[in-house]
Each structure stands twice: as structure tokens, then as C-alpha cells.
Length: 326
Image (tube, rainbow, N blue to C red; front, side, top):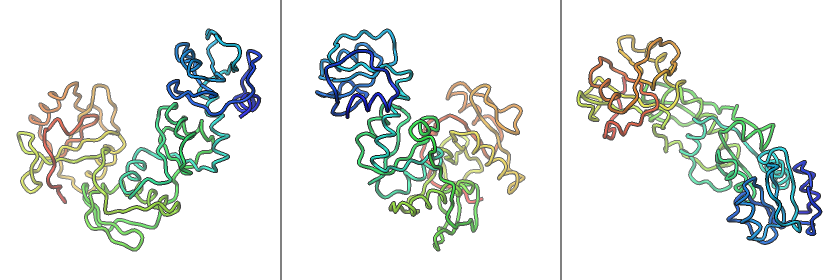
């Protein structure tokens, strides 16, 4: 690629009069720089190393960078990350790649049911890793969950908005029987209000001819129930009326509590969160700072369901064996 094309794509300014006129490839990692490459960085040590490795051009946004080799091209931009993705947009056009912004739940289910990941790439939240992936990947389909980053790559990034025809047949808080694509799936490890995410993901897979299997469904990191006894040991559902539910998001707690209030009025539920966490509909959740405090609360309080936000089930030192159907 010619230097003048890089200037146009990144909207940069050439701050010297270099001898070189074109570059071979581009990277944001100095360790990957090879002879003739373009390097994006505003770190002096990285830039110096990249030049030693054979960089032909440097894109930077820090006015304090010292230009130690005037034979290569020095391109000043207003924002190095934005400049990098302006170059990526050109690459995307040549690849005819598609990009989709997914929710965290949608991404979890997509990774879960996919049978293989050929022709699809999962975008990192680290913009440098993302730059390298798009530049070097053979995939034509990219998905990610970082809205700001995805819109920087493609301002009109698509979302999963369509659902395939599917519906719940019967459900409890911890298991769902549902029909989709003409098939009935019995008592799967699926939270009923997670079905909408799954249906959108199934439509995405079918639209893009990605092989998948609903049989791979299991509880996600977003909502993991574990039945426990009085000593916080995992036990069978038939032997306990207590379940610790570990979640990584507040929305699922709110939806689950609404579900419980609609279907099981007799169930006593509590919510445990880090300090100053706000949960809709709860004035004073039980705050904890340490894992020991979580265990103390679970041992000493009266409850059937304990929703625990931002803690790992490993604090129980157990593995779940069976889930209740009530």
C-alpha cells in the first residue's frame, strides 16, 4: 500500500519527507514488525524496536515522539486507535466481511451451541488484538460484544434482532421445555427468560449456515444454580429447599425475582451483592466484601433462593448434581 493511500485512509499528516513510498503490511505489535511494515504506536520504546525490526512507516498520535529515522514515513494522527480502524474499514471492504454486535448472553449461547468455529471470528475487547485479527483472519463473519469498539470498526454494525419461531411449552426457574425448528427439547438447562437470546442465536446460525446443536445447552456463567445443604455442600434437589444462584448481571436477578413472585409466592428469596450495588425493587440487599461473608450469610439467613451477584460458585467448593423442577 502506498504512503499516500495510508494518509488518506487514516486522515493523517506526513511529518517528514521520507524516501520510502509504500509499505508491505501493518501491525500494532512491535514484535510482529517485519521489513517493510507499517507500525501503529505512540510508545517510544516500541517504535524504536519496530524500526530496528525493519518498519517502513510509523503512525503515532503523541507529539513528544522522537523521530529517529527520517528515511521512513512518520504519520501523525489525532487518535491512533481511530486511525487504525479507519485502515481496517478499508480491509473490511476488500474482504466483504460482515460484523454483528451481540449481547453477552447471545455470545455465550453462540459459543455454546456452535459445532465448530470455521468462518467466524470472535472479536476481543482489546482493540490491538482485534486489529490483528481482522487484518489476518480468513473469516468473513465477525461478532463481538463491545459496542464502542464494534461501532468504531463499522459504524452501522448489525445486531441480532430476529428470532426464529419458537416458544416455551413448560418451564421452571431452572429448566425449560421448548419447541423450535419443529423439534421439542425436553427439560433443558435453560432459564426460561434466556430463551429469547437462544432463538436469536439459532436464527443467526441458520442464516449464516453455521452448524449448531441445541443439545449442547447447559447453564451459563450468567445464571448458575447450585442446591445446597445447611453446611453449603452441594446436594440433590430432593434433599434441599435451598439453592444458591450465582449471576454476573443484575438484569437476570430482577427477571428471576419477578418469575419467582409470579409462580411461587411461598418462596423466600434474598439477594447478596458487593457494597453499594443497586438492585431494582430491593432497597437494601445484603452486602458482602469477602467470600467468607457470603458463606456466613448463606449459613445464617432464612431463604429458599439466594441470588449472589459477582461471586463464583467455587466459594462453595462443590459441584452441582441435580436441579429442582419446582
